[in-house]
Length: 114
Length: 143
Image (cartoon, rainbow over all chains, first blue to last red; front, side, top):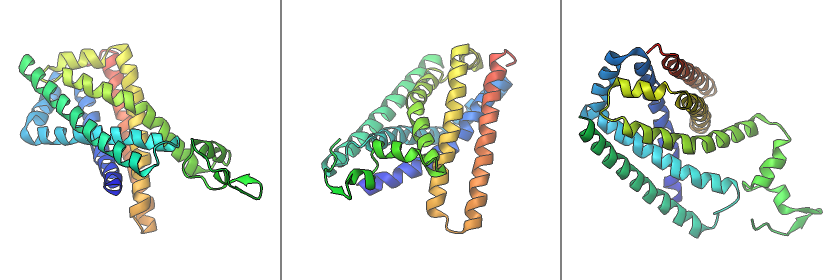
């Protein structure tokens, strides 16, 4: 599992790098005005857009949780095989919870503001 | 931190072989090698990005379904704008350093690697500049 999480960390990192393009475009559309913003919202609100946003949110939370493991390793903690497995599992569970909360709240907000 | 007490030629083993300990990294920093500079900035930006990316994601959620006015008001408030600028810079630099490591490990043709790293550097650099300018544009009220 350790090897799988390691390669996933890299894959999500590269995928999130692609996401920076959309993030910057979102800021640009805010700067450009209501019309551009509405256009981007429509694109992101389509099913392709929502799937991409979902994958990006998952990738972000995974990379963040697993990245915290890396930071602990850098400090010299958590190298025991038992701890590596436990923290890996914890990162996966935290990723699932954060992604679920994000989308639950997103749907609540979209309902409230529609 | 459990360090082995075994010594070789009077030096504790942990001072000779570093297995990722902070102590070793701090000592090695004195060499000022580009690789370690790279290593440190990847960690510094990572630590900065933990709270900032959570904050950004949470803020975006509250703007789901809301229109341009809400987004512009958020981006345009001074505190948010400042944090967004730090976020964009840290994000682009972290992404660049990360992709560079990945390319270093998987691209084995030297000139492709060099050109690829340069391309990623240019693209992420431009993204950072455009992102910061967009935030400033909204901040000064031009949006």
